[in-house]
Amino acid sequence: MKVDDKLLRRSLDVAMDFAVLKKEGFKDKIRKFDESIDIIINIKDVNLNDPKNRIDKEIILSNDVITDDKPNICVIASDEILLEAKKIGVDTLDSEGLINLNSEEKKYKKKFAKKYEFFVVEDKLMRDVARYLARFLGPLGKMPKPFPTGYGIISSPEDLQVAFERYKKVIRVQMKKQPIIFLKIGKKSMDADKLFENMKTVVNFIGDQMPHKFNNFKSMHLKSTMGKPVKVSEQFLNGIEV
Image (cartoon, rainbow, N blue to C red; front, side, top):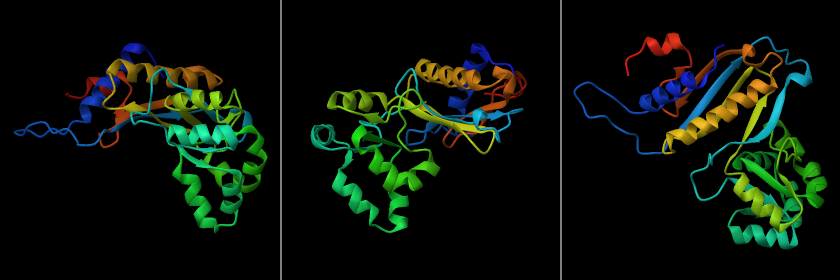
């Protein structure tokens, strides 16, 4: 499909406009919560039965995708790294807590795995994390990955500081069973130029993963959490009134 900056930017502008509730004769209404801006890419002509064609990576966007004070991470660590994590104010789990978690019921461990977007683990505890949590984190794509596929395995308090700031910009890109990729590129409150930069990073990254680049894109849509989807195509954009 056609992918160029002008088309992407125009589509983003329309998606942002669609996030505003409009009704003839009434004042425009902006929703009270900060909606996410999402991109949905449908892929074609890619055989997902071949593991080489699947995607499971973390990528760093150009700008923060997190607008809150801190990313939704859990740090599993010991000693100095654990103390640094508590100082930063993120949720933590030490080696004893990891063992205790393993004794909990299955439904509790599933809930724990779903609670956090990312898990950051001290390298020496990775074996225990794999032993106790792999069956719960793995299906969700949340097992900490070493560089270059991910950034969740650390070895020092300095690494944790870097990871903390990095995870404000990191998103998980997955395409395993279905030829569709759904990602958050930011929040509606963000500057439009920064949202556009994030979108370009995502589109270019996924294009680079495809055997025939953008020719493997069947379709692409943008939408806010509650807004109508916008198809990234000249035909769609020319047929609407904004």
